[in-house]
Image (cartoon, rainbow, N blue to C red; front, side, top):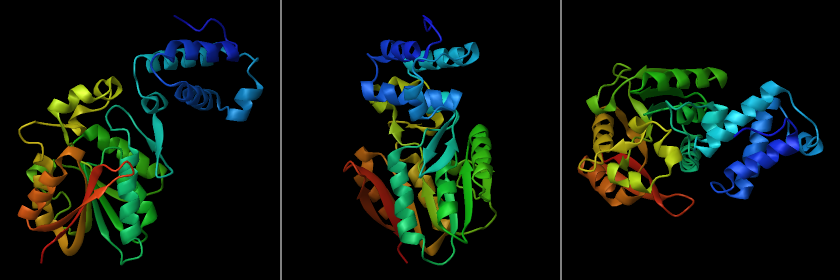
Length: 289
């Protein structure tokens, strides 16, 4: 089904009809405004003032395809090719996860604890779009930021995002499960990671817009070894985290105590922290000297 005309009010009506059973009305309204801003450069005031105007055929087709993509569950961030993270523009593709608010909380926590201390070497493991590394690079002055990911495509996106945001970050393709340091013997004061942590058994609880579009490589771990990445990160940090350095980890809310136990077994003093929804979402750890 196609939009019946190129009149703005008809496009708006079509969007509500197509999406009303899938999204709340308020969210559909936000989508419409985002699409008009992205494809036509219209702000909210312009959209409201020109509802009875018409648009050209090229823009009509773009909006038609975007609304159909939303109907099939494609995330708006992938349709637009971008999002914001800590008020920073970040490009995203299906090769990278869409940054979440809980990950922003981790970044703000790091900034609050580390910003006014001495310059740091910072490593972001499983960087994806590079959002964490870029936000920290912009906020913590005089620090050198490094970032790794196993995905070649993700690293390309992260490099592009760093360039757009005028950040000088050292990127490397690397598999943390091999516990190799691609930056020679560089040691770090901060190691942060949002690694894969969703168990295969939890797929049934996830929305199709995640399962069908976001990269499974960055999301899922086997049910019989759900902490595989945390064990490797802990072993890596045992070699390359400075004695007074800190480890910041986003975690599976259902596995907080298990992740704490794993880190303590590896020689860390680890503390569990809750996110804005009261869920166990972050661990801050230091090596026991």
